[in-house]
Each structure stands twice: as C-alpha cells, then as structure tokens.
Length: 377
Image 1 (tube, rainbow, N blue to C red):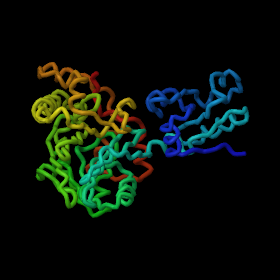
Image 2 (tube, rainbow, N blue to C red):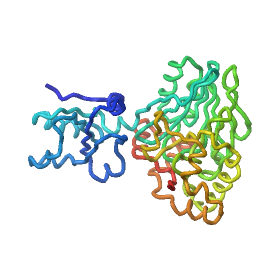
Image 3 (cartoon, rainbow, N blue to C red):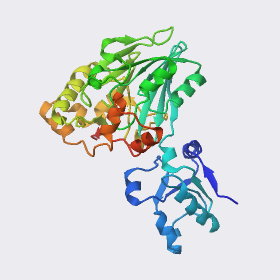
Image 4 (cartoon, rainbow, N blue to C red):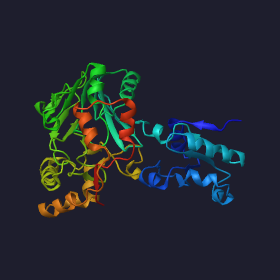
C-alpha cells in the first residue's frame, strides 16, 4: 500500500485544526535552520535524509508512534523514501508531495474586516512571510502588493463576485516577485507604483502612485489614501483604507520597521524612515490597524488569524517607534539590518520589468524566507 501524500492546503488545515501533528524535515540542517514550516502549536524536528540510509535504529528514537508524522523535504522525493521506511516500521506517516517547493507557493486568505460597504481580505503566503490584500466594495476590488501567483487573486475575485479595478505595489519588492503588473494586465485593471521606485524603467505599464491622492473602490467609496512613507525604499507608500486600516507595505511591521539598507544607503534612508515615523505616521490614531506586507515570526499572526495590530500596540511594544532622538533612531535602524535577501538584485530587475524569467526560474529565485524587516522588541 502506497504511503499517503498530503498537499499544502491539507497540511495547513491539519495545523489549524489543532490536530496533533509532528513534522519530520529531512533536508540538510542548514536549509532547515534557514527556512522551515512553522506554526504556534507544531512540533518540528530535523533529521537529515542521509541519516536514514545508515540502517541505525537509533535514528527512529523520539519519533512518535501515536501521532501522524508528516515528512518534508525540498521537492518531495527524499520525503517519500523516508516516509516509506517509517511506514514499514509501523509509523502513521504521510509526506508533503512536492515539499517546500509546494509550501512556498501556498496562500491562505483571511478576512480582516467585513462591514456593510467594505470587505478587507489578507492573503498570507505563509512560507515567504508575504502578505497581500484585497479591498472589496460595491462589486469592485483593489489588490495591494500582489505576489506573482496571479491566479490566487483572480480565483478570489471570482469567489467574491467582484471585478479587480486597481492593483498597486506599496514599493519595489526585493525579496519576492511582484504579480502586480501581470495581474493588472490579466484583469484590465490599472497598475500603480511610485515612479521613484521604477528609476526610469520602461518595461512596465504603470500609473505613478504619487499622482493620486485617493482611489475609489466600488459604488460606495472605500476611502484609499496614498501616504508617502519612505525609509525602506525612497518611494514606499502606505495605503490608508477608510481612515481605519493602514496597509503599510514594508514601512511598519507588527514587530519592527522596514530595513533601509537594500539600496546601499542605510543611514540616509534611515533618516527618511525617522521622518515617516515621527511626521507622517505620528498623525495617525492609536486605533489605526497596521497591516504590513511581511511578517518574520509566526507569533505575529493574531487570535483572529491575520497579521496585524493597532498602531498603539505597536508603539507600546516597539522601542524604535518611541525613539524620538534622530541619531539614536538612525543607529538602531541602520545597524540592525541583517542578511541581504538572496537574489534581490535580480528580483528587483524583474519587478521593474527590466528582466524576464521563466516560471521555473522565478520559483528558484524566491525560495527562502523574507528578510525585509528590522525587528526591535
């Protein structure tokens, strides 16, 4: 009897159900330590595939007989072989059919808000820590920071019975490939991004976001205000929806601020980020709900199932948001940037429309976690 396979949606459902589940990741330790499946109540261990080739029973010690074991590898092949060995020894086992490659492309939509005139959905690409949004009103939709799998958005639009009218990127993404321009083309929508992000690129058809004070979504206006929030990148723009929800891009996270070093101007862009925090964002109410484009820790998913927090809570818990001394702020932000996202120069080129790659190459370029946040507790 063949060992059972499981797909990403099924795995996510099991994790969310609270069902007891044990993940055995058989990739190399360095790959596991860099990037793995995480959840609040998930047991995950790493035993490399080659350890199971030694026919040493010690490798099985600690593996549960009374809990389902889901075996994970990069693309599924190694996980299947280990799962078959475990099955022969009487373990309750399945394996993620296409491994982390499949998990990296899984999206989970969660409704953040639903009222009489508006619905706001967050799409969480869990493996990448990438978040995108659909704002719905009056049969129309605005999509913010779409990832490259555009069918996730078109399918959602069909299920919500809405037409996508506007697509915008809050900034030029460096750690994942944007689907903004492609989604706009596929749906007949208009694509927006700040012109300063494009640096003269001519490969994409876009409207300069800074030319629009507000965008109208639906018969009833969902108030969308573009607020310049430079710092992570010079043209970063946050979107304020109905004076209540700040789609903050990579400017403000639940646990930190956007890193300012990816353009090689860490201190200069940190100064811009200071002005954003203490001028632009300072005027917003503590009750404003911040909805970022990335998260770095599974703990940032709140009890309602989405990544977001009030601006007041973020100000209270985040030291750098309260550091009003400009020099101290600059040192904290510019000095805490961490590892550069892999392949970021090529990804930026793709997102400007200067470089074109196959879907297979795009998947390869995106593998790994996001590294766009500077976290300060």
